[in-house]
Amino acid sequence: MIRVLSLLLILASCLIQHVHGQEFSGPDTVLVRSGDLTLKGLVWHPSGPGRFPTVLFSHGNYATESGPGTVDALLGPTTSASLLGPVFARKGYVFLVVFRRGVGLSMGQGVSSLDRLLGTLADRGQHERNILQIQLLETEQLDDLTSGLRLLRARQDVDTARIGVLGHSFGGSLALLLAEHDPSIRAVVTFGAGAGSWNISPELRARLTRAATAIRAPVFLIHARNDYSTGPADSLGAVMDRLRKPYRVKIYPPFGNNTDVGHNFIFLGGALWERDVMGFLEENLRH
Image: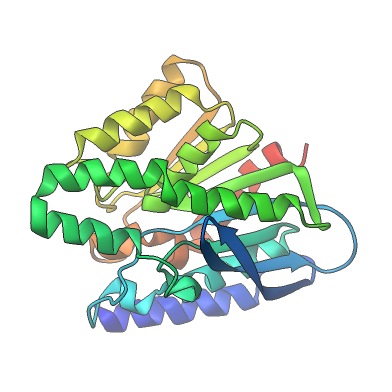
């Protein structure tokens, strides 16, 4: 499996080098203040003057130390962001990833959400872990992501009227809550949002359903068929359809040979989703 993942990662890196579009700069390292913490982020941006439409990336969960031979060990948070940033910057978007507390470049600033969830699961069981997940999504993790949004709004190269959010996994759930919390968000794209917890957490299902009823921005819900679950897109899409909210759902064919690879489709399958995602953003951030 690791050999296959390594080859996919090399292929994804090569594809980035051949993305057509304008020149870009970055990544630049930025400091993001979130409460008492000083987080770090990376920004890619189109070259030249102007105010550009912008994408805030909400990464997934990462443990402080991923086990050897795992997808998370191969696709760490910095590598993952570096696979995405150039793609969006070359298409004319400012792209920011804020490494939330305890993750990536923000290691040492607080405890990562996954470390806290795993600790609670081991000590107090699944139900308490599910309760903590909602608390983290609604408080400190949302605070960290909102701090990145605040930084973007202070930048001279950002068109503050055209900001969207892109989220993966736990970060996809967080992206939905950010859009619920801040109606100025113009577009939401999620990959595998809530997929890992959907079948084991009625609390998460209820919370994301509540977010889907409140979000005003157009939402694009994406999974590979072999994600941990495609239930989030099926269920949330049905909610938004019933309420006649602007949304799109796409379930891509199975990607890779297991659910771990399928769940990381966002990083390794850009050649498959780029046209769809860029078209969605074009409709909602450029007009």
